[in-house]
Image 1 (tube, helix red, strand yellow):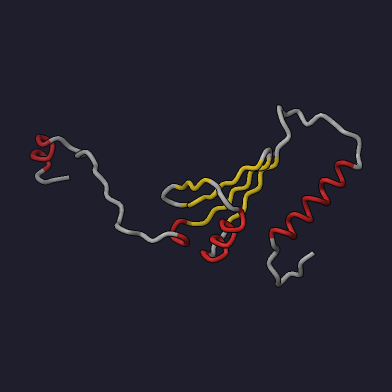
Image 2 (cartoon, rainbow, N blue to C red):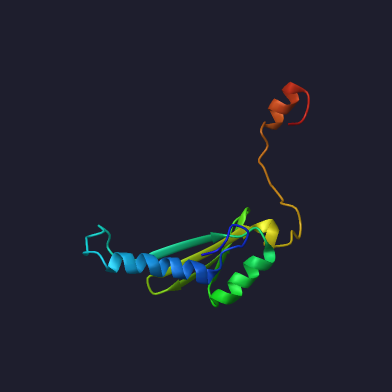
Amino acid sequence: MTDQNKSATSHDYARTLKEAAEFFLAKPAFDIDAPRAYSYTYFRFYNKEQFITAVKALGSGKKEGDERDIEFQVKAGNVEITIAAPRNTVCRLLRPAEYDCDPFLSPEEEKELGGAA
């Protein structure tokens, strides 16, 4: 167990999973109403160094992202781990977003209103 002022580690998490596994294995089996048993774990980071350390520790994986977040996913058999961070925490902005919007008004409508929109 960790104290309140210390951050948990991946090994702390593994020990907790082991406790859960031992609990389930000590009980009678029951149908979980799923086509397969798998484990999905998600961790979110707000510190670049912690995120990069986690990526290195997990090894080879898949990088994905959108405008808001960057994610790194690792799959090992029926285990899937996703770590994520706000994109601006991990990445550098190279240039501002560039948008191309259709005009809201036709040229005739703009003339009628007396200006561009």
